[in-house]
Length: 191
Image (cartoon, rainbow, N blue to C red):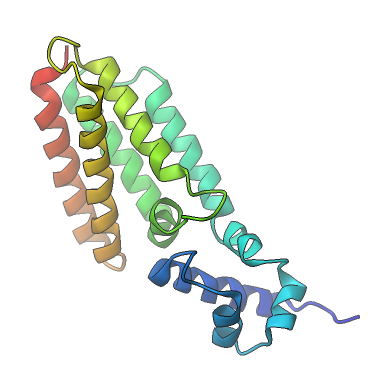
């Protein structure tokens, strides 16, 4: 029986993380991961049962962190004013980015075809529900409009995270502007 080596497992995870970030889950194969690590596909399967298992090992700890932060942000009463709400949303997003920008992008935008592929939609739905609770029906009657606003905010954050993945100050400045723009844009509709 072969003894599994922790450094090989780590190399597999590191290569997979880079490839999932660059190409997404669908376009990354176990063969390409094995080639990147310079091991056989058979040897890779001694460490992980399949590509889904590798993906889960890459994102699972971060997924729990993101899930907790999103749930706390949108399920509890927090801010009394749009300005306070802006600060809370910005702080939550930056907390996720500071923890791991690569895994944020992988989890939210590169997970199609995995058990985590729903997270982007859930995030948009959470923001949409939050806006629906904050905005009167008289001001905005169409929930689809709120969904579009939420989806655009998330897309902007993802684009910033992809572009500035190695430049935290630029990422922070960009996300600050996006969140402030979002909150000021919906501000007149908040009841």
